[in-house]
Every structure is written in C-alpha cells, then in structure tokens.
Picture 1 (tube, rainbow over the protein chains, first blue to last red):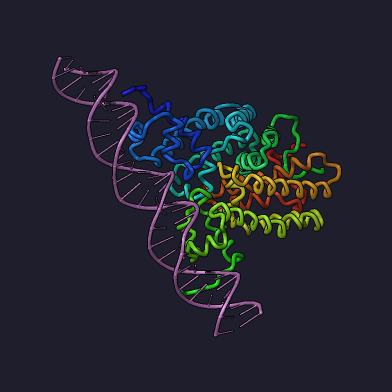
Picture 2: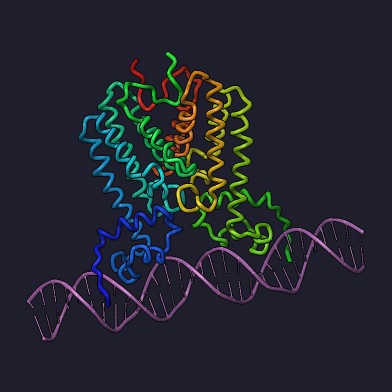
Length: 194
Length: 194
DNA sequence: TAAAGTCTGTACCTTTCGTTACAGAGATTC
DNA sequence: GAATCTCTGTAACGAAAGGTACAGACTTTA
C-alpha cells in the first residue's frame, strides 16, 4: 500500500478549514477524507471518537492558536499594544471576515451543546483577558467587562455581516475602529456631542 | 384518514424555530415532520421544492417580520424612537440572545451560498435603513453607514457571545448600550477622555 | 350528488451518512 | 530477521438522509 505518513498535527488545520466552511453538521467524513487526502482508516486511527473527536481536536487547536496569538499578548503586552496586536491577529486570521470563527459558528446551533465546554471557555477567557487589559489601560473605568463584551461582539458580528454582504472592507473598518490609539476618537455607536 | 387542515402560514413559524435550533444542515425532514405534526405528504405538498423550499419560506417570513417590526419603523418613526423601537424588537425577538438569527446563522457556513440573495438583502436593507435613520438624527455625521454596521454587528455578535457563554444579561446590556437616549453617554469601545 | 381539487398518511426508493473490520505495507525494536 | 507497532486503503455495515408515489379522505364547486 502506498504509505504517506501523516501526522495528526498536520491534519488538524485541514479539518479546521473544512469545519469552518461546512459547519459541524454539514461536514461529512467523505468530504474530510477527500479534502485531507486521508482514507477513513487513517482518520479513525487518529480520531477514534470519529467526527466529534475531530471537531474537538479542531476546537483545541483553535484555542491554542488564540492563546498564543491573542490571549497571552493581551496579558503581557502594554495595554494599547496588546489591543492592537489582538486586532491585527483578528484581521489576518479571519481574512476580512470571509473566514469564519468556528467557535462562534458552533455557538449558533445545537453543536454548541455538544462542545459547550470548549465553546464556553474560549469566549470566557477572551472576555476575561480583554477586560483585564482594558482595566490596566484605564483603571478608573468600571465598565471594562462591558467594553470587552462590546469589542468581541463587534468582531463576531462583523464576521456575520461581512460574510452576509460579501464585503471584506466592512469588516476591516469595523475592526480598525476598535483601536485605542488613533487620537482618542470616539468609537461609540453615537458621536459624542460634548 | 385523519385530516387536520394545516395552512402553510401556520407551518412556517414552526419551521423557523426548527431551523433556528438545528441550522440548515442539521435539520432533517424527519425532525420537521415530527415537530410540526405534518407528514411528509403534507410537507412536500406545501413545499414542492423540499428542504430548500422550506428554508426559503422561513427566510421570507423572517424578512417580512423585520420589515414590519424593524425596518419600516426605522423609516417612518422619529430617529430616536425608531432606534429604541428596533432595540426593543431585537431584545424580545432574540430572547436575550438565546434565540438565534437564522439569517446570521446561515451566513456563517455554506448555506449562505444557497440563499445568498435572501441573506444579502436582509442585511443590506437593515444597514441602509438604519444608516438613513442615523443620518436624519445627526445630519452632520459622515459615518452613519459605519455606525449602522457597528450596531448590527453588535447585535449579531451579541447573540454569538450570549449563546456561547449562556448569559442572557450580557446580551441585554450590549443592546441597551446602543440606545441614543440616555443622556448622551459615550457608547464607544473606549471612553471619551476629552 | 357528482366531479374536481386540496390535503394527509404510508410505504418505499436511492443515496449518503458515520462507523467498523481487517488485511497489508512500511517502520521500529530487539 | 523476526516480532511488533504504526499507519493506510478498501469493502462493507446499518441507520438515516432527502425525496417520490400514490391511494384515501375531506372540501369545495357545480
């Protein structure tokens, strides 16, 4: 038999892309086998738990990526730089909003219940770490958690909006408006009048 | 045969709820038949195009609801009242973010391509009509479209976030912060400093 | 009341789903 | 170099998928 040795680590990103495109229910083992080039044998060798196992590995992988590229920087970098790093990462990772956040996508249907732990902790950690960063930035502010919610919601909703309208520029503008370092402009829903 | 005459109009809301919960791919005719109480015969009588036909009817129905309860008010009411009406509708309709926006959910996977027209025009109309309302409110502002994007993204992302964390209060706070009529507070991501 | 039209339940079709079984090829170990 | 382990391809499984066929029962029209 032709044997091209595959490693689990190489397969997970491919799986991630497939789940991103088709969603959990829309992804079939057939598609996975075809797009990854791995037969069913290999697939079930790496992921004995089947499809759910594959999706769980993808969620882990995504969480790790955000841990390194977003959450950790939010903790260790100076606040303004941290937030800019986060937004830069978001802009490239989600490809102008055309590439979906699987965790967010999973949250929208019953898939959420299956992976409630991973989905919940991903967003909980993001909120916690971003709120803490905002607090370091403006210790006087008592609404850091709400600000964090608003920023994350803008990112997630920006993906929905950008994909629905097919407009990547919408997403980029939305994200860049969240930056803290462009001359203290008002980033609110309504312009400040006074 | 037992004959309980059903009307298409009565069935569509039930379908909507099912698609909301399971997503397009996760919804099977079996589930639909079971939950709606209609046999396959009736289902395919009302929707000759099958599952896609059913989902299309749901999208139409949702669009109509928003047309009446959100878009039209945004056009005809005084701006501030219009926006408050929209936010009230959003709060009750999405049930604290636990109930999903099907249009938004469809936008996140390949289902979008199947219903690109309905998905695109739903959001395009929302953006257009909200931006126009904001312009009437503050004719000087040149960023009404961006503000509209931000508000709609907050709503859609708020649903994602609320469902992921299971916290309905997060969603309510997020929505209420979008209101224009509470003493000109700054609703931005960052507090205004000057 | 006869005819036509509308709705409904059931049985069945084909395809695809996720999963399993398993033999064999290649690498690794002793 | 035999034994073992890791990986791979193929075939097949039962279950569930979406969809069709169609006769029967009720309404409506005439």
